[in-house]
Image: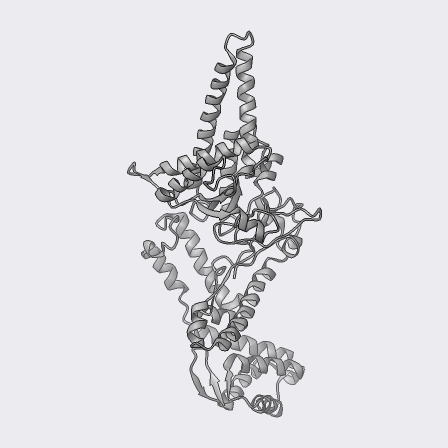
Length: 494
């Protein structure tokens, strides 16, 4: 029988190694807790009688633990587990110190994210914390087979840098609830805005705060801002009417004055969104990863206002933002996703002018990305849904009233599977490919469930902006988030 070591080497089976390992643990217990020679031999015989030609060293260790507990040697089993863990620490060179020191000495070497300033102290602190979390996750928190699969490139457990804490991945922020019903930032009540400019400013503050308590992207549907542009219009109209109480100015002059004031508010508000998203820093030392969803719903209450907002967003993105040398550049965030529908598909629709702007913007500034409303409706039972961020689409979910819900949902965790590796190993054997894929998808599911179980029991106060003040929910103080993990929710990215 061959034993497959952790590094993949196949070595001859030696029962003496099992005897030595159990005896090492035996020396740590007393009396009846010790395993007799006969009991040790019975465990060895069980392993040998399996009749396997090849067996993983981890499987041998699992069998030993199981058999010790079956014969009631619980304390011995615990000592053996400790012995096994200690040996794992001895085998594994602790590279965490080297990684952290490397970060400090060579800060630019860790520029894995284009919107992270890896020289900044705040970013360094986040990266150092990530190295510690990855080390503990790999050695202690994850099952050994998941850690090994990650190391061997079978899958990528993307949560390792944050797995130590009860935080999740991407979110579709319920900005409608937070703006309409108010929210709390840094212990201060923020009431519903009275106009577009304030709504944009509050939105960016919300996004920065949320970015400090999760990792991954967050998406906002700009249709929820249309209401506040209408509020600004009504406010300006009232102001001008009060000045024009004696009707000195014609209706045309009044209209032009109000429109000018509204356009100024619109331009300033969108500029606030663009500037603050790119300049506000979350606690991890980077700007919040934000995607704006530009979907113009025809016959909606604020259709006109939302068309104006989309137009202004595209115009300002075409212009770009000045860098420190004063040169206009393409901001990395917010990313833009533009929806193509019958009313803007360059076939004579009334919003074709917006699509022409979007195309110009794409050619000059990489964004927006595009979504087909037609295809979305085919896939989502008549609904036009946006991805969470730029890639992760949510599965359909209806609330208790039968209404499709997108805002306020989130992604628990991320595990990626290495498809090319499966293809290479299969060597044109289609049956082998599908068999390997099925096995590895099961492994991905197990890895994702590790994240699910890690989040269970999390209290709402861990991230009030998410769980108590409307970002994702409005739970009570210290209420567990478990019901959100099990029912309404989430998308696992595999």
